[in-house]
Image (cartoon, rainbow, N blue to C red; front, side, top):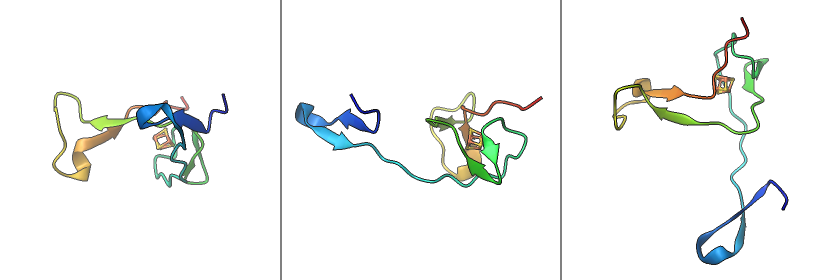
Length: 67
Ligand code: SF4
């Protein structure tokens, strides 16, 4: 199956969301010229929280330090 497609409600195929992600975390492995080049991105509420009330309480879990 084409990786740009995923199964939607009822099993029909729908196009997966695809968007450009601008990111200021320049020490991340996936960051090139302030853009994210990860194949997929996971963002969660900050550690220890079940939900975020403001953007500062969200966290990119895909981040990987360039070292
Ligand atoms: S993985 Fe997260 S931190 Fe890294 S470039 Fe993408 S959005 Fe930024």
